[in-house]
Length: 242
Image (cartoon, rainbow, N blue to C red; front, side, top):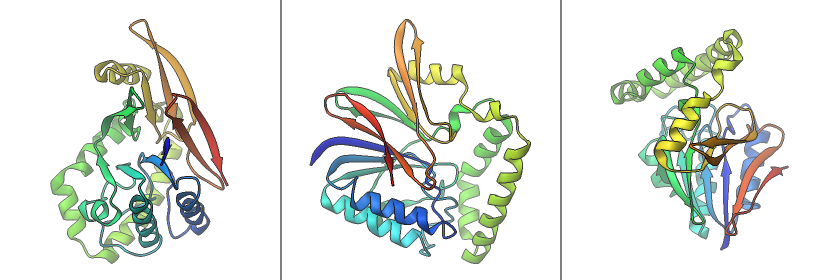
């Protein structure tokens, strides 16, 4: 295995974007094959409505992830705001490891904090309130108990409504709150934070209690993908996936 760790997020795979699914499957069979670890930090799917939905691209993606895990690459998945209904069957079928909303990982001797990123956007109060509601176990149980076709209809409606809501919001409140970032870096004892969600790819250097820290914001995949690559020597690079 190659001593290298890859990070991706926000692919938003769906049947409406077959070219993006093909790009991801090619990535798994090519660039990701043979690396030590792959971290998927949420929103792999644009609207995941339950493990029992094996329509495209869910089936193809799960099968490809299982092949990668079987080949020896450790894959870890973290819920995003679009695929928080990923459940136990997904992890069983793919072999991926499950990460909590915040997870401290060992990045070749350096602790790093990984998260989807939505919890960092604390200025978006309405979103945070809605997040608490839909992440409750009772809400998820009721949602998953509905027939698949009802969930599919709801997912289409949610995507439409989400687009309208974003258009009405101040863009500033949908970005990570700087103090929330500092607080999480401090309380987790790390100097590296990696997340997605905001669709504002960048590398931010900042200070916490007199020490330097770095925040890597992963990009949304579109016609091309983007991956943060970290090797055992501590060097990193951001690569485009075509």
